[in-house]
Length: 59
Image 1 (tube, rainbow, N blue to C red):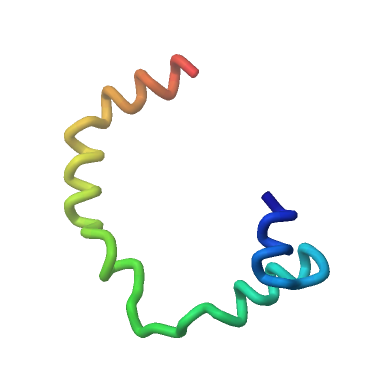
Image 2 (image 1 turned 90 degrees about the horizontal axis):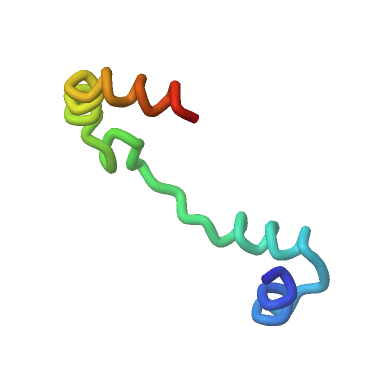
């Protein structure tokens, strides 16, 4: 995939791809709380805590 990005972005190497990506990021005032309802996540984790522990012990 890296060759595709290098060709598409018309850059010389992987570092340039990363720099281009970083330079095009848009600053925002949104935090993770805007995208995730953490109270809902905590509620569901508590509801399924036993199942999560069972799954963790299997792997």
